[in-house]
View (tube, rainbow, N blue to C red):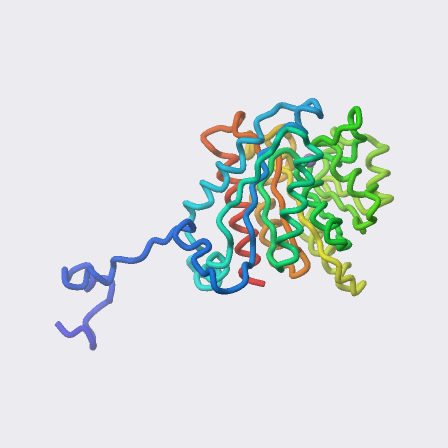
Length: 322
Ligand SMILES: [Mn+2]
């Protein structure tokens, strides 16, 4: 049988001829085999774990989020690279550092400072910090990376809650990070925008406070265009300050994200959530990312851990396609 001319379909021949089988043996690379394998070039993103849920406890929530970063990273490592964007995805991941798990002491303010120093280090090196929380107290530590380096920053939060509560007995917590950033003496927080709010979980005064310092978008009003407009508005204002993206898993509907600190019976769809992560990953001004409030203690068959790992996967794919 001629393989060159008129020999029928290649696939049927390959199946029929044992000698061709070797060509079917394909590589089945997973992220753990690719990540960080190029140590010569500059690092493009740094994976950082922040296993803290003390802020959730102080805020009166259910703890367990401290267990999330390790599980999310483990799940991420088992995923493949995108088959259609394989080369770009591979190139990026070869320049992403292995997950670095920070030690959290339970002193939230001190732990946030420590995270801030780590984030600042990455930002100085031009690497995109990708942080796995932890409760949403993670986001203020994340922000401190900017104030530490004196970089003005816009904060974009995807969340069911505004998280602009006051401190509790002087202590920061999972409900206060964006009040802390807005009020921070360094003045590095240029704006705070939160999208995905549940009207049954937002105090009127908190909504006004957010709108004075940025913008609040309820989940019912949130479309992909809302996210696109956020970035095109920055561009049309020739605003070149970086954006820090923070995503609270409790923005997603409880049916698709049961393993969170505060479940949401009317949240956004997980596909839309992933699209936001991918879109933001593609934006050149998104300089850092955190994902918070995944709580494995309340998960169901790792459903939320899987969604969290996919969220990071899509963000990194976006980064690869910039
Ligand atoms: Mn939150």
